[in-house]
Amino acid sequence: MVVEAMFGSFSIWHWLIVLAVVLLLFGRGKIPELMGDMAKGVRNFKKGLADNDEETPATAQPARAIDNRPADPVLATETARDPNTRV
Image 1 (spheres, helix red, strand yellow):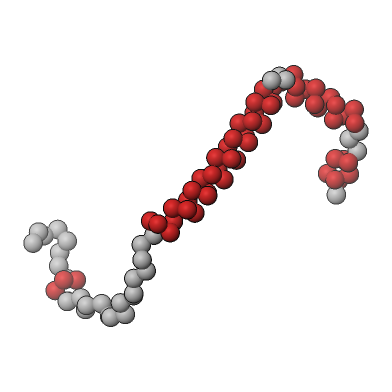
Image 2: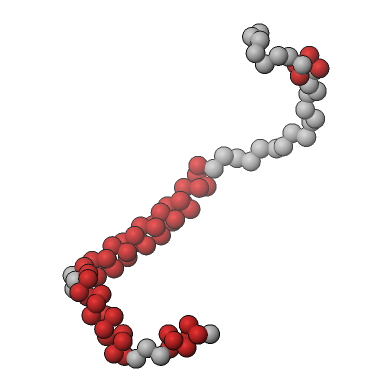
């Protein structure tokens, strides 16, 4: 509750000072460049998702039936074998 009350108490002058500091740190040309790079990244991400959706049906393997047979039993001699000996 205290954070919400404090955040809401900033006036327009506080925000102008913050904006001025950000402009001094990053410069006027850097902010649009960063936003353009971010937009390109989002665009490439969406394009990649669309490409992935288009390729999935073509590269997907057909579904195979599941074999419900029980596994072969393990022989007692196989489980008692010493792992250090070679066959």
